[in-house]
Image (cartoon, rainbow, N blue to C red; front, side):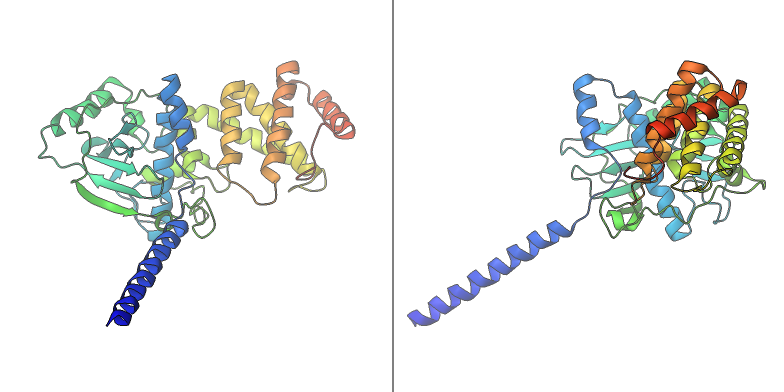
Length: 365
């Protein structure tokens, strides 16, 4: 009898160990999102400078749901030109502040637009561990709903109506400060909640970036196509973050100048060998960044070109090379002005910099 009891305890112990091992293994395999920089969030709480971070998080939410749209043929963002055009979409350009609940989960509110008017309120949440993302419809029966809805309507009426248009650029929009429910966890789920694989936005292998199926859009009509077309001639396959940045931070006239700058940079780059990861590539980035600095201003050009490299990570180290050569272009502009006014000097200085090792013509150089 005593032997039987020992055997029984041994079986229970082994079973318990296996369960713990399985749970630990499951936790190890749970991937995190490559979006939502939690360290930046912590720093912003310390410095109390969170307006830029809230814009960054809004773009991360947009990137996640844009990837979801591409993977599933939906069009919640209104940016998926491969899906049917809808007159209703979530506008991530106008957003609330970042709200943190008692468990450390973060969420933001966004308006749903229909016929260019606020029609509903959604919110998205990312958990403390950066592993679970969900999109929810705020119930219109909660006491705070009318106040939240009105806050977005007021922001819409106070600001340029073009900020709600998918085909127009805007410059700067203040966040909508929400004092609503602290943890609206019982609201209606629209997407998810799910892990990063569901959105194609995993930090490590297995999720992909989810945006490779997108394109810069065509020259057709319709709200969605017009929005995606904002990047036409500037970026071949824009990510949602790049597209949103262009719409938020540049006017149509500035984007036309950016298109001209791409053409000029490509024209000179094609005279040299190695359009990708070569001398031509180095010339293209150096000239492109300097031209954009002249037309957009140095800070705005730096923000765009840095976003372009960080939003499209490459495994061959070419992003670091491009950032390095971009900086050379920015420095040249700071010292000499618009290269359009003295392209001969720009080219002379560029090739001198190549010979002195200041320009990188290969990744990891």
